[in-house]
Image 1 (spheres, rainbow, N blue to C red):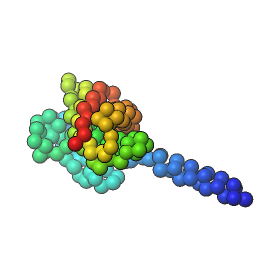
Image 2: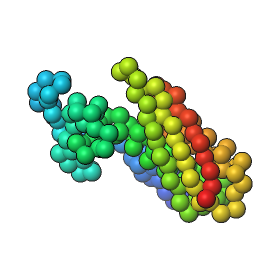
Image 3: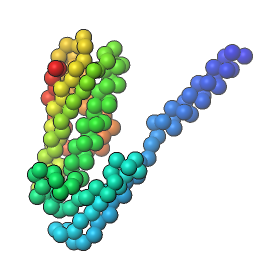
Image 4: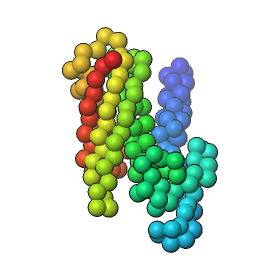
Length: 161
């Protein structure tokens, strides 16, 4: 009888796990006007993006970032965030608990194509060697879900603080 109970718990656990690992996220982009002078806003299901402006100017003539976001900035942010989360899990699986992981992502856009995203990672992880940290960071980079959908080179420089 106890075995049946555990089988039911295991089956329910896998159903629960499947629901957690399957996700859909909705983002809405609205554009008004032509390519050069038009403007748009982005909204996300979570509310993190709430009428965030974007335009040709915010994309190509906005070095200080005050005019709004752009698709490339959002891609870089998605990769940096996903990478940090994946690395945290990879470190946990290897027996390490990160105190902090700070990743900068520098996206290069050339001739209409994202060609490279350079990740620069600084981590605080007790008891890990720089070599082990670098190996685990590369594992996370190569297996991050966002990395998997990007068709560009992703480089990584890592260091411990």
